[in-house]
Image (cartoon, rainbow, N blue to C red; front, top):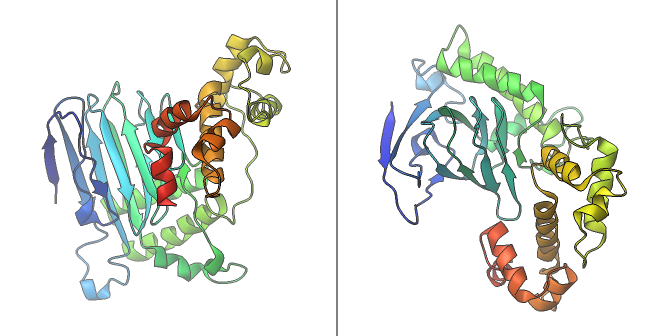
Length: 329
């Protein structure tokens, strides 16, 4: 089955939710001009009798293709775990937000993996690219993880964590193998995919859950060495009320401010200023849990000049005003 849809430019485009069911991988908003995108849902070995399909409703796959001119906004919120494989990458980059954190990637490498756990929220704004972009979506029923409750694993305490760009080659290879099998089922396909799913969930437990081993900061070519990046983050986060200059951060690292700024963004995907703002917004969110504190007090304690600047920055990063966020707690 192929679902096609056209979208026309609009000042405030709707951003429908993409749920975890193949029949519900629905419309996408493309605000920058009219565009045509295609969603192709896949089922596993659909010619097998449904009564002999023990996991027929447990996983669903869908391929979404964007033209290079598409600038698209996507929202994900589902009762299922969702994995997105960005097969071709996004040369124009993207912005993302989960309601509490936000980030920006100057470019997205081919075969980048995004993991959105069940009931988590994720918004992605894809920019225009130099080539078309394919995203393969795989939704997984969360109850499948119960089959891993053996040996030294207690799934009752398992909490998956959202990951934007999973740096695990095992996850990538397993996901590509599942994609190929779903698209072209072979002999004993269902058992093969079932085995791959157990491997995939195990890998996700190791790299995207509370059971994961803390990951060391990885060096990015053209970025800061680990020790410099760690020191830069300390300098940015230590003083909660004063905004350090680039020279004040680059100096202790023995780097020119311009080189430091470029290398920091290469390592983190954010400029030092943007990183500092997001850090302060996240700190403000924690402080807002104390209902005795006023928003002005929180703003000043987090390094903002006043409630007005705090409100503007907070809404720009999270999409909601500080007052609205506090009311949602």
